Structures are given as C-alpha cells and as structure tokens.
Length: 360
View 1 (cartoon, rainbow, N blue to C red):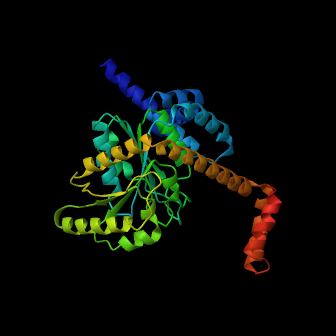
View 2: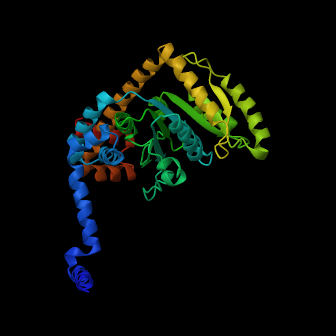
View 3: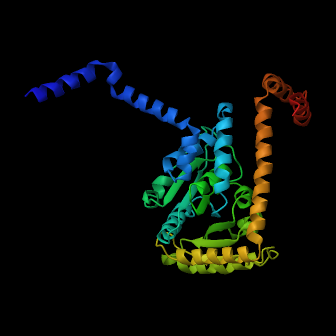
C-alpha cells in the first residue's frame, strides 16, 4: 500500500514541478548531447572504432558553415586522414525515378553478405524555394539501414550543382576512417553537371531506363562519356524486350567515344533491382574493373586526380565563403545590386569592383 502511495506521490511531484516535465527532460538530453559533441577527441575515437552515432555527429559538424566550428573540423579531418583512402568509391547517378535507391539497397545487401562494410552517401535535392529536403533514403532503403555492416547518410544538396553535397568529399574521408571499405555515392541525378561525383569516385555508374526516350539526351549531356558502365534498370516483365533493345543502342553510343585512358571498355548491363536480378553481375563487372585498374596503375592515378580536384574545390569554396563574409562586401552589395538594377553598372563591372574591394 505504501509503495502505491509513493508512486502516486512521485507522479504528483513530476506533474507539479516544471523542472521535471517531459519537454524539460528532452531539452536537457539535447544539451548533454551537444556538450558531448564538443569533445572532439572522443568523437574522433568513436569514428575510428566504427561508432555510427559519432560518425553522424562528425558529418553534421563538418557540414556546418559556422566559423566557430572551423578548428574542430580541421582536427577531425586531420585525425581521420591517415585512416582513409582504403575503400572503393562508386558513384551512382541517373534521372529521378530510375530506381537508384532500390538498386543501391540491393547492391548494398549483396555486399554486406560478402563481408563488406558499406556506407551510402545519398544526396537529396534541395528545394530552390524553401531550401528544404525530404532526406527519405533511409525510408526507401529500410532493409539495408537496419544492417549492422551498413551506414546510410542522406544529405541535402543545398546549392551545390555538381550532383553532390558541398561536404561529400569530407564525408567520404570520415566513412573510410570508420572502416567502411565500399562507399556508394548516390547523386541528385538532375541538371547537366555530374562532373563533381565523377571526379571524387573510382567508378562512375549510370542507371538508365529502357524506352524513356533519353538515349539521345544522355549522349547530348555528355554523361555517357563519363560513365564507366551503364545499367539499364527495371529490366523485368513486359519491359525486358525494350531493355534488350536499349542495351544495343547504348552499346552503339559508347562506341562513338574514344577509348578510355585506363584501357577499360565501358559495359552495358541489364538489371531489375525490384526483382533482385542482375545485381551480382554488376558487382562482378565492378570487381573486374578494379582488378584491372589496380594492375595497370590507373587506380592510383585516379586517386591522385581526386585529391587534386578536392584541393581546387576546397580553395574555390574557401574563397567564395571569405568573399561573402567580408564586412565591406556585405555593406556594399545592396548598393551595387541597385546600380545593376538601374543599369548604371553592368554585372561584369560590378563583379570587378567588388573583387577589388574584397582584396582576396
């Protein structure tokens, strides 16, 4: 009886005391997590031990544009750098609706069964109006996300036009340090610039649909020229005949381009991610590619190009950030815009004027 009274008394105290209510407890928990995230040494130790929570916190931190996080970001990257560069980086792109998420999940499930640790960096397009993004890849890959050997990180593309998020390169480095030996980088798949993902991966895979009328459009965009392989997805049911026809057409298209410097002849494969058919053949093709690239030295050459691209992009990002955070630019920018609007100044003259003012 006394035990029942004590429970009621404790419940009454919780309700009457605002410091013990649920929202206050949640707020306190969030504060504790924030305090923990500030301990960079523990965070990096967690990454190196493969802790997914620490890895996620670190990626969130490096995505920050706040100046107060700059030193912490540098520490994380410099600590993780010696443990990186030990994975296979595979870029996967294709138009919306081609089945990228389903394909990646089936490929990821195949790889974890083979004993690999797989990280998926999935980039969702951001709205140009609201700046928001759904980030629904964890929902679409519900089987893979539950596997202990897999890690899925959806990220908003923001204003990046290269099909990848602004900090995808750093995320790759952190995932490698956490022990993930295969990285699948899913791009937005919209627009005409997929150069960024091509420049930061070892293999560039293009997903296509049969009968979608985009064969010629793909050639015009030049994306086929960058592809190391084309996989025609959804090759099942009544669509098999159209898929086989598309395979012939894409093979012809690939022969229009000069041979690749690595000696690899791009392949065209059929697959049905929904039916889990052809995924093993795609992986066999990938292993053949990596074996050949490592034997002829192209793999290391490609990695050197990736580092060069990373360097130039980081310089460009830093200069752009420094320019727009410059106090002189902030004060003069509205006035210069007004002059452009009134046609008192051309955009080219305005840019030259502001760059001189910034003294970068």
